[in-house]
Amino acid sequence: MLKLKSKRLPVLISLAIGIFTSLIFIAFSSRFQNLELATIDWRFWIRGERDPGDEITIVTWDDETFKEMGHRYQDWSRSYHAKVIENLSRWGAKVIGFDIFVEDPSSNPGLQVLKELFTKEKDEKRKGMLEEIKALMMRMGEDKVLASACRQAGNVVFDSHFEIEEKKEYTRISFTPPLEIFLENKADYGFVNIRHDSDGFARTLLLTKTHQDETYLSSPLKILSKYLGVKESQIEVKEGKTKLGNIVIPIDKDNYMLINFRGGARTFRCVPYYQVHKGIAEPSFFKDKIVLVGMFTETIPLDIHPAPFTRVSGFRMPGIEVLANAIYTILHQDFLHPLGRRNNNLILLFLGLLTGLLSYRLSFLKALLVSFLEMIIFATLVIFLFINQKMLLDLVCPLLVVLFTYGGVVLYRGLTEERKKKEIKSMFQRYVTQEVVNELIDNPEALALGGKRKEVTILFSDIRGFTSMSEKMKPEEVVHILNEYFSAMIEIIFKYEGTLDKFIGDAIMAVFGAPVAHPDDPQRALRTAVEMREELKKLQEKWKGEGRPAFDIGIGINTGEVVAGNIGSSERMDYTVIGDNVNLASRLESLNKEHQTHILISEDTYQKVKDVAKVRPIEPVKVKGKEKEVMIYEVEGLK
Image (cartoon, rainbow, N blue to C red; front, top):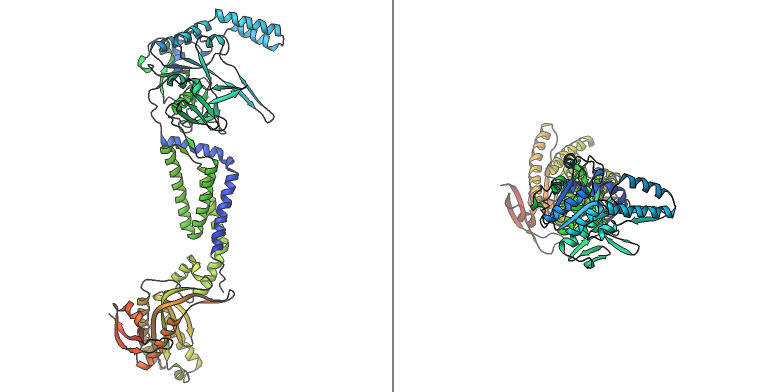
């Protein structure tokens, strides 16, 4: 017979599967880092490009400029830059950021040969000679022209760069500022270190760096401090954030900030370098603006980076525009806010528990649909929070947790519940319809050992005069007639989705409302009784035609509260109902003989079927087990 475990155990196992799956993905979340980063790029694409405004203008060394000026960029004289600074200053640029390194003197073939010669040797005297040559050529070269332009403008910021070599055994850092000739002439500098994530894409920029007890500022900080009029003494560097005046910039433990890219390449206003150099550009593009000058071409593989929008467009982003996006992010406090590992882990646990519970409670198909709906809702929420709140939640691991938790619970249910289904089917298919069996399979908790109180309608039917009739017949004929009679009656009971509780000799006990309840169970019981009488009349005509004796039946119906459930032991049990209301239904059936009736119902049943039943009241009777007399009614038919 059916063995049912505690209702809590499958739930706990399903929740445990959710927790275990979540912990697995928490432990191995780093393995999915590249997929997670890709989803961030797709979030940028879904959000779309945003207007960067007109506060930042980029002067581009692009292919058009190289063609127009007729030089390779390696051959450009720094006097060109001096001319650009002069024009930008004349047009009212507020800050000029040059994305070039000026750590060495102007390019000169003779100097390069000497440099290679002397730096290969460890002769300090020769190195000293090289320094003297550098100083001489600086005085004679074009650096002096560029330095003069910087002094006149007073708002130029050059780039520098930290060389960071990280090994397991050591971390080596080197940093070289611009030449003194520029710093002595009011030029400033900030470093630009763009970090590439594990998938090779640029998404973050180093904001500050402490080296040899000195804190250096990045170019965005230097440029914005000049643009906003914030003194460097007002720039604070603390764990988890950098403060630029009133702007608090979130950073990670290594002082990198996430860049909220406005779009792909050329999202910001770009003006070719040659137009500025020749003085033919539109001056209004530069007045009171941040002007960035740098390389802007993919034909020369220098300082170009895969960035979020590259994943869709295929175009990499020049470093100067990465810098522009970083400056915009800080200037407009347009920061992205990662949720943090701890909170993302809590989300994983929550989704694992929720999916485990839902996957246990629902059918396989419904659980699958709900799991996919859960994934869609979560992905939509992640995208919504990114677009509207600039929050970054993990997406890949949560979706995988939902999927794998569903799979784990389904596997568990497949291994354990198939046996339960077979046991339920074996136990009930003889007593209820297939539809009811299916409902019990979907809701096996209704069959727990013990029972619960339910309002049901009980129908008892009994054959009159069967004993005397059977004495006149052969055993085979008795069995044949009984089988024919019971088959017809059970078919009617099943038609109205009643439960065949048991056979008691030649009597039938049926229950309407357990284990599966319907709102009209009393009416179902009534219609069953009426049809049983009609079907019996057909059988009586058939038996008379066959020369066999016929019999009559009496039916009693009562509605009330009973205890319904599996009654017995954990090794053997039967589903049934017990209680005084069962006894009353049986007593009503036997009263048919006394009152010469066929169908009797109780007052409680009458109140629930009076709209559909034709009845004749019968005087109250005293029933065993009841203190008060019970009003009963004879059913004459249906209205």
